[in-house]
Length: 171
Image 1 (cartoon, rainbow, N blue to C red):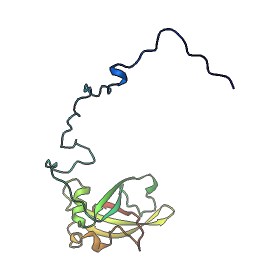
Image 2 (image 1 turned 60 degrees about the vertical axis):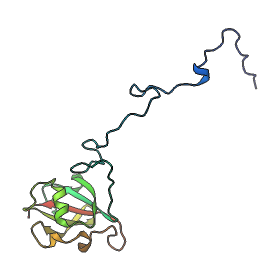
Image 3 (image 1 turned 180 degrees about the vertical axis):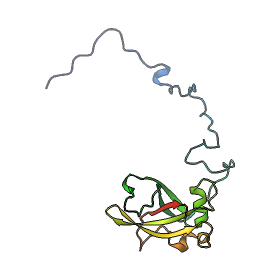
Image 4 (image 1 turned 30 degrees about the vertical axis):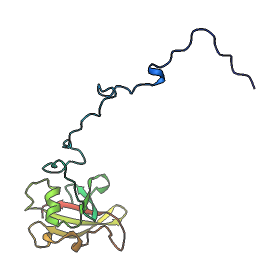
């Protein structure tokens, strides 16, 4: 094992100013001052943005139970033989189980008129095949039932936490 090289003699190495204390770096032209003020209203597109905005100082009480809903975005029904569900666009949501089907459709259609629409549950059969499940037409009485009464809960199929697959369409 070799000994380390001797310390060089001569001019001393530069030392940090202020007695060895290194000041904080510049952050948005703020050198060690108070933290920048962050606006209370979230930016559009933020994951904490709520319709209508939030009033300053108010908190949100979330539901105790949500279900996972995956929605197919395609023109043909997913249960058709020629449906290409493996390449279909899907959108995923956590949905409050206390909502009813009308509320879900209103949110999925982003405030557009839903009177001529329906949502159909799609059940996976395996090997890329799907079966048609229950259909809820927006104007029907069944669409006013809470999701828990139609079986859309956080515990699907005897405790299975699998997602609910749906397809929204005109009936």
